[in-house]
Image (cartoon, rainbow, N blue to C red; front, top):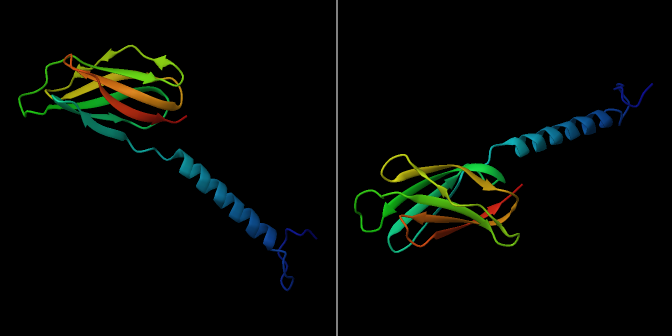
Length: 142
């Protein structure tokens, strides 16, 4: 008889089955937790003229879309493009060229394809209508 069979009246023979079942449940839980979608990452900052909210789908490395909401501090009408986004990772010396954002409406913009090349502490530099860049720190994971 194998230790893996359940015998009435014998103690301890069900233990390997219980341990195996528990281990399988732990593996399933770990896989499920690792495959859950990460929440979007959003930051708000500004300068003396504009308030900008940057939203990314998550904090992973790769080529990502960036959504921007830009409003004027004085409450005036919508922003006049150009709006550009540049990604910089100073510790590794990575930098992407500025990418022009496409206007969705008067205050919403999108950039398709900001390239975050590797995990690290990145900075997104958002320039609105020629003003000084607004810096957004971003911790990128693998």
